[in-house]
Image 1 (cartoon, one colour):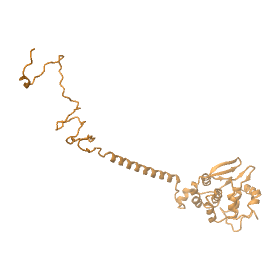
Image 2 (cartoon, rainbow, N blue to C red; image 1 turned 45 degrees about the vertical axis):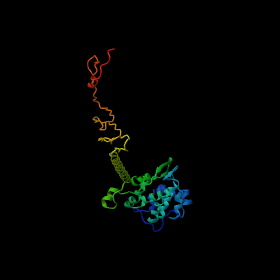
Image 3 (cartoon, helix red, strand yellow; image 1 turned 90 degrees about the horizontal axis):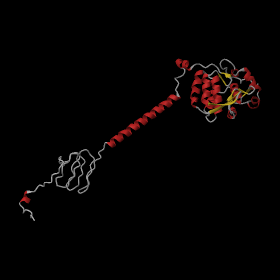
Length: 294
């Protein structure tokens, strides 16, 4: 009686639910010590405590011994819990091996459209899982385990039921198109890049506006030095010293000292090799008395 399927269980894929596990593995599970000691009289509620204690997933290991994960999977097939209970198993994020057990059971018993709808959202779960096989323990990830269930024919040493292709289900209208998480991530990055570009352009515009401001300074007052950096320079007010750096300069009106730095300077130099020693005498000086001959 302990190895028989619960009374009133529905046939899955046209056969007894326990027959989804191969005969050789199923007989080894029934003969194992873990099945006899821990899986006797388990219910959908008490099975949660056993699933939390599981430390690895897998089929058989060593000398073809079944793992605890496989024993609990066969127990689920035997008691056949309701779909609402399995959905609750999936929502238990803190217990990853309980979720992995529910994922395996859903893949083996549910319809193809429901399998895609329930398992594809779990591809974003990147937690680590220990996988036990005949060679020992290896490391895998939850999203890889889900991907194997959706594409491989044999997982955990069990041949999985046939799963319809997703493209066929989309053509029939059973499920909608798949939403890629990678595409969403790329779209999020593109939006961030657009935001960064708009911010950089706004900063450049603000810098250009601030750079186009006039740098000319107004004179402080009379008697102080006036420095102008503007291209058009106006003469300083009367009495203030004015130093101009423009090529064309005009002397100040009040007769103050004017120092010209223009490249063209009015200095006449004689080209003859002999210097002239003649001095020019003003007419006023000619009327004066001549110097003494002595």
